[in-house]
Image (tube, rainbow, N blue to C red):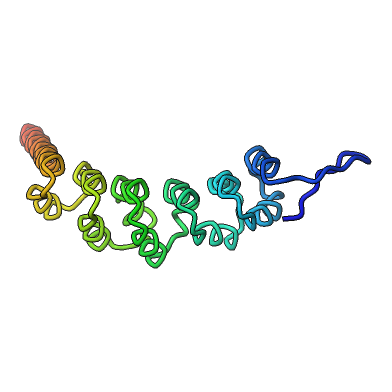
Length: 198
């Protein structure tokens, strides 16, 4: 990448370290989107990570970042509210194929964002993929999430890893307790309505 910094009549050539700093400190503003796009062509993972959470990125720039093959960049993308809303199911498949525990655990913890808020993919499909991962850390993250479907949690109570199985049982208990509290509140509301004189 050919990059130079010029101040008045003085000019220096910038390497990846200087560009990383610029990517981090440059104001996240619409007028800088073209510069962000040029910076996104860098092969420096650290530089790309500094760009991922910028709000004012062109759609093509975001697509370049999402499709980068560096695990460091992929982890930043999956954790970024600005970037992950542009992901597709095909992107999710590529990320799942890495088998990276940190990456997939973030998916498991943020199920609601990927399947409901941004509608990147279907919840049942994603849960099935995550529940089938070899790394117990991924399955544990899925078992911790109260947004995980009850059927998936019930299956995880029989997981080969005892920590995963125990966590799934604990999460199911939390869900049932929350449902019971809701039912009690509904009953109380109905009783109050009955007490209102006609």
